[in-house]
Length: 108
Image 1: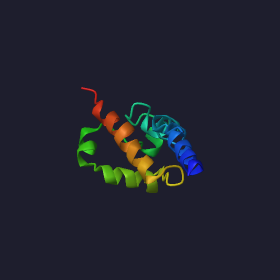
Image 2: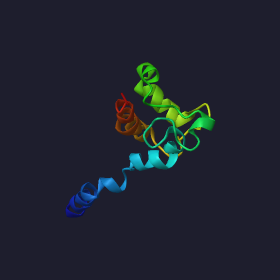
Image 3: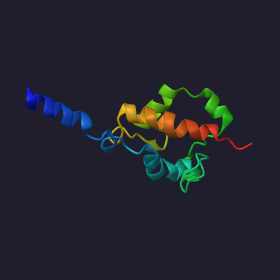
């Protein structure tokens, strides 16, 4: 019983942050090359490959969170899929925690 309690305590005290990816860093490393660091689609390859401008109000108005997650995991157009690098939960957090906030930073 004591051994089982000790094991449970070790599991619960293990830092979760070691398992949680820094999705902002993932975006900067993998996505910003086309979408730009600020989400405007002006990354180094954005013009050549058609990097989506997340701050485009017309595009943003048509987007559903679930569709964005699918695009990230499966890829779309020139964009590769990231199913091997991200879980579905991580892709959803990438959308809600990184991409949607970039959409909100529209320039007036």
